[in-house]
Every structure is written in structure tokens, then in C-alpha cells.
Image 1 (tube, rainbow, N blue to C red):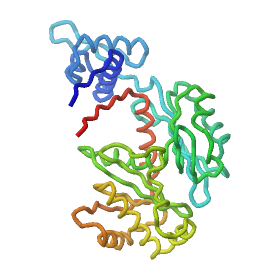
Image 2: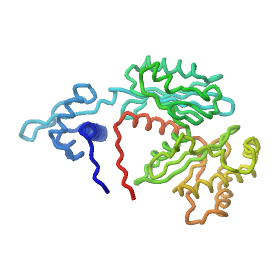
Image 3: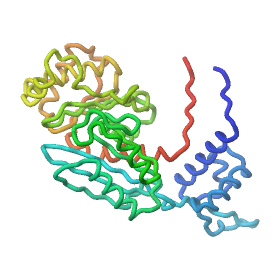
Image 4: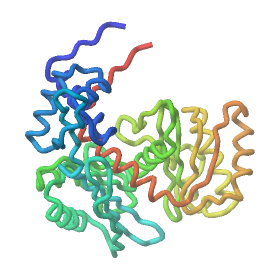
Length: 342
């Protein structure tokens, strides 16, 4: 592998993230303990801490108890230095809703609420975002989950027709001068599931949802990373070649026999392509009593040694929000991935 070179700016940004992450993990720490945790020199940690104290992102606490020498200054990450706004747009059983959660910079909830609405369009989303930003003026990013395809902030195919084709992300960014992420609901749900399970190493994992009166969708984590595809279309499971029209597919999904058949076809396609360790089957339609038939149906095509664990979880609201919060907070950090070619 060729040695990777970084410029001074990149090194500085990576070092700042190391120091902040160490402080978030420890609660309070001294320069020496941060240096020990990060592998950076005490001098480098001191310079970074001084800069973060100057901006208010880090707080100086009273010195540690002395062991005979000069007492060491304690530092604490200021979780309330900023916050992020996370908004989930949903439509289920004819009910439109928007759930929002405000979290501080370590993920602690500041405010959480669900609004049921007669309809949702760009103006409705804009009005809510405006009110939230007025109440939380130190917001640093906005994350919005939508039941559809989103690419570069532009919403494509969507279960909320009034949002389809709308450049929601660029519009909100220009109006409020704050970074805005528009993400697919399944990508955020699978990301939330992945973090809740807290795998000790990077794994491949999938979530498939079968909502009532809507087409199915899926989300994938491959080796610890969200697989969203070139145009964020990955996971649009209803476009698999089932040999029937999409309208017929929707009708069959609402019968027991049709659901099991289409679920087996969907799951076997996913297993054959990404070989996940487990798959969560979610939405209104799946039932725990169907799981055995689905598993045995998959075994007709997939060798047993390659079968993932299958489980049903109908309510994924918390996993969805967990994924959205995690992704939005991560958007604030400087990340430079080094990938070794095999």
C-alpha cells in the first residue's frame, strides 16, 4: 500500500476531532490524559484545547487535585455549545406526521415532539424548521428523513407526493444559511439499527420494510457503511423484477400468501447480493407468525450456512430517529477515510 500523505490543514482537523472525541468520551480530562488517549503530544493537545476554550466549545474546570506539583487544569466538552435539528417525515395509513428532535452535541435530547398533519408540503416543513431555528438559534445542522429517494437535497420518488421533485435541501440551506441533509428513511433506519446493536466489528446488515398501502423498501449497511448507491436509489425493493406490475405487487403484499412469496423473493435477492449477518423485517404488514414460512422459503434458494438471522420489528420509530441523529451529528465532524486496496 502506498503511504498516504496529508496536508497540514487535514492533520489539524483530524487532531481536533481526536481531542473532542476523547473529551466527549471521558467527560472531563487533563491535557496529559487526552494526550495519552489520542496519542498526540501534550503540546499539541494544549494548543487545540486553548483554541476550543476560546470558541466556547470546551470549558476549563477547576484544577485537578495536586499530588505535590502544579495542579493540572481539567477540561470538559461543552455539549450545549450547539445543537442539531432532526426531522422525520412520515405517512402511514393516510396519516401524515412530522416528528422532530433537538439534540445537543453529545446526542442528549433537548426537545422531542410529534405533529400529526392533514398534509405535508415544502411550506409546512419550512414553517416548522423556521420555528425550531428561532427557538434554538445555535443549531449547527438540520437532518431530514423522507419516505423516498433524495439526492443532493433534491427529493425524487416519494410517498409524500407534494415533496416529490422538490429541491428541499438547497432551498432550506439558502434560506437559513445552515447545512441541511435530506436522507432516505430506510437508510436512516438501518443506520439506527446498526448503532443500537453496537457490533464489535464492522458488519453487513439489512432492514426491509413492508408498510401498509405503500411499496416496500430496504436499507443496507455493508462493512459498517451505509450503501445508498450512485443516485441514492439503492434499497428501492419494489423495483425488483417480480414479474408483475407494481400495482399488482401492492395488492399481493396485502394478502398472507402474496406477502410471504414477495418477502421471500425480496430477502433472497438481498442475501445473495450482500450476504448480511441479519435482516430486520419491519413495517405494518409482517407478523411474527409468518417468520418461519419466510425463513423456510428463503432456504429453497439460499444454502443454510449463508442464511442471516431474520427478525420482525414492526415499530422502528426509535431506530429511525437514532440513525437520523447519529448521521446529522456526524455531518459536523471532519472525517477522512483511508481505504486500503486489496
